[in-house]
Length: 375
Image (cartoon, rainbow, N blue to C red):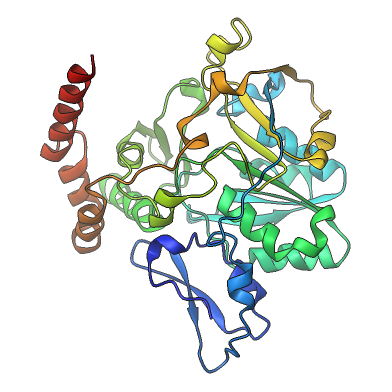
């Protein structure tokens, strides 16, 4: 029987719940919106399958040789946050008869994974969503498609890909996994609280959101909220808290996938550092993707794309990101932030943990002192 005595032991992929033959496991959200398995002891037969399906606890990653390319798709750049790789990958998949699964915002701006079969439906799956997506029923749906003989492209965080891969291991030849280099997944409840806070200020609910607005340039990290009858707002209130590591899922701090050895066939990321690694290749601030391929199937699938692209091999060492080496360390204030959010909401935590807060100024002062001593 699966038992998450420590929150750090569960990434929330839902493979255990989807794979339980007795329907004994439900994924239940905590106060921060992170889902954890809850076992109905009356239905559980203690068969142990849920524990075998937990890729996260078994630290199941990849081990193959990784090849890296800087890649960008000129006709997709204007609507992409990096180089357009995820969109090109999904378009290719649906064009070749794959079912595609990816994260999208629903009408209430909740981030959920969804299933698409047509190229026209790929659009909502584009762009980053800095919230842990709701995977309710998704691993089971992927498995159902595979059992029906269909090919599937599943895109998500590496822990989500690892969970789906473990659940669907007997059908792995039909399943293409594409993960992202993940900074850590923020709390769905904080995102919801932020939207409610902004709705209170504007007098209406946001009807859309961009977590990184492509129109601001590749290096801009600010969110845009879109309102039905009022001008959109560009700010970094939510983004600021995210990058302070105050609201990440506890398992992110012990993530076994923060490595160049991935659990997927393909890995996607921003190609930060491309200006120095490949001078002149992508210096227009419109973005560049990093494509990492770990399996023969991944190589075969990414050999060509239905849209024109510019691509060059790149030395992975020169574009190595922190989360390809080690997990994101949670802020020392993460627990107090959570307690404060649960008691007092978004406005309070932004005042007390945002850019004007005393603890942030203290954190910056400590960082500057350490920097001087390192010189």
